[in-house]
Picture 1 (cartoon, rainbow, N blue to C red):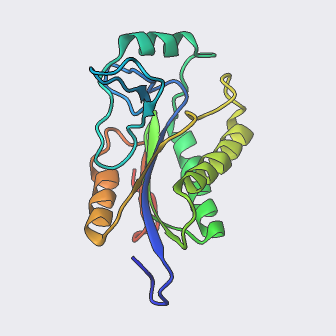
Picture 2: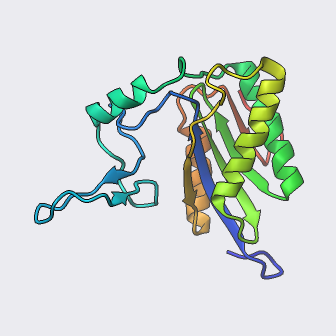
Length: 194
């Protein structure tokens, strides 16, 4: 998609989890890279990513999950309503500063989803990284740094929404399909919905 001047516009559904709340190999499934093995070939070190549109997530991998649990530095991080309110304010500030448009935000105790429109072609990792980084600074300033040293998992899901229907579906998913949101925000109303 492009804006009226022909400048490319990208829409992304960005998701990340709080530290320790959804680990590789999780019994619920997980988005992770895994070793790929073909029956006719020996085990290789090539890895396959499961964070692109149309790819499935990994089923439960008990050994990987146990290893991930054992490597946690502390208890998982859970957000409360006060955290979510502060994060939403920071996400809006960051988006305004960068010239991005937030279309939908949902913040839950263990993760957040954001549909964002960006002009040009900044990488989605940069967009998600900026939101997480500035959100972390704001949270740490108000509540102290968590024992883990981070509020978030290292990566996150970055799904491109290629057309208007995908954008509408993404916004609907974020605003209406989240379990127990602490806060949601539709851009057309301008105020959080809780």
